[in-house]
Length: 195
Image (cartoon, rainbow, N blue to C red):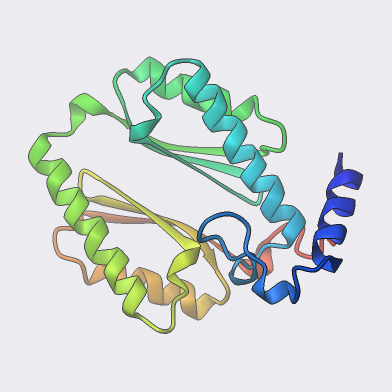
């Protein structure tokens, strides 16, 4: 399987697409801005897709769920109806090929009021805007989820300074109860030199 990926990526990179730094996979996903190697990036995206497929096949409302895979670690966030559903999401992630760790930040829907959900949306929007404006941060490398005033930040930082800058921006947002950063440094990726 990995051999086929290497061949596919080699053909892709040597074809008429041009310079690798300008290669775009999908809508708005510029692989040159992602610190992961192309192989690791594709492995993570495939795992994300497989987890979401399991969720959809089991008739769950994935609209309220966010799945992110970084370096083989599945990060689940969002809201589900029952505690049993939260456990099933963890099970789906663990059963997926290529997953070596699972972090489940899903909350039960009954625990959050409509007013709190509106506040959470505002917090996430404010932080998204702050990351976008800050020139020291590559905002495309981060996903945000706010639940009950607790902001979860998922992504990859190229440097420790960028990681610290992201957390600093989050601390400036009003009504944030807690900041939970799940930010991996690019230097700590397990398969940096995959290809």
